[in-house]
Image 1 (cartoon, rainbow, N blue to C red):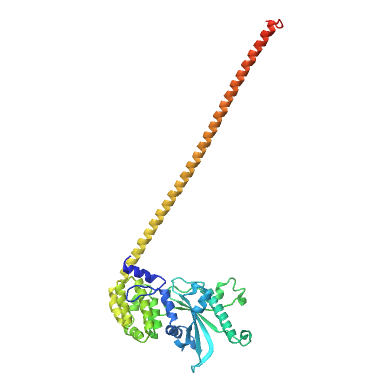
Image 2 (image 1 turned 180 degrees about the vertical axis):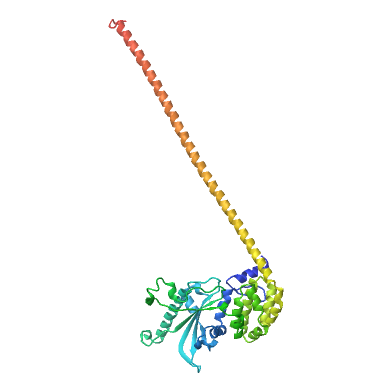
Length: 392
């Protein structure tokens, strides 16, 4: 495997790429996780996408990442999810004293996960239970008071797939006979933020780094990429100039991962992501015409076809080998069966031969006994005759 293919393979894994290239990228789910780990990007996401007035002015300082606190209880399968504790403020900027928890599930696959509602419920129960214990440590018995209330939890699914999100948004949709037992089923609605529901123009109009990342993560085919390249470079450069180095690195890594999936050579991909570092994304578009995306797609499709053909040949060879082994086993079993039958027939023939020999010996003894009896009779007759008892 050459250097480009080795690094490209790493870029498709679910872990951060480590290599000797200038800029290295992460796979889509990891870069999405990094988006929500960054308080600036997270605040921009809350301001722009949820349509909740109380979240319009949430700042990075109002957001605390508490994900690890719950991953410990929920396990590794929840590691890509994000839990934020958000401090809500009144119009004058004063703290309301009532936290809001944001549960963000990242779904980057093209297929819809129909069990996210159950996953969110697990978070909700865990968060409320932990919050209750926290308040009990502050004031024992408070959770049993009439005035005590648990904090609100806002469940979000950040979805980058191009397919329509077809899963039910109500938790009750996952429960059997929910129409009969509706009043006994806990229920909530989670919100899906789907990248492909926004045009590039709508995202770019926001003018923040989160929207730029959403634009990049929308790209899943050559047409998406072509539309992305038609964006005004100066507007993208303004976004890069007005963000932090950490966020620029996230943008670089996300773009690098995209270029790797497009099979762009590593050295060339590094030159393009350097334009992000210099806040000159226009350079990227000036040179993108050199990349024949369709040709790369054809090569990828051809390589995939050849791989599938090799898999089919391997599978066929394996099937033929298994059939040959099966036939050999059957032939072996048949031969062993026939050998056992021949051995049994041989043993039977030997027993019949031995029986015939015994019958022959018995017949010979009977013949000898008869002859002896005849001779004995002859002797008795002669003796009687000699004594005049029996006339000759």
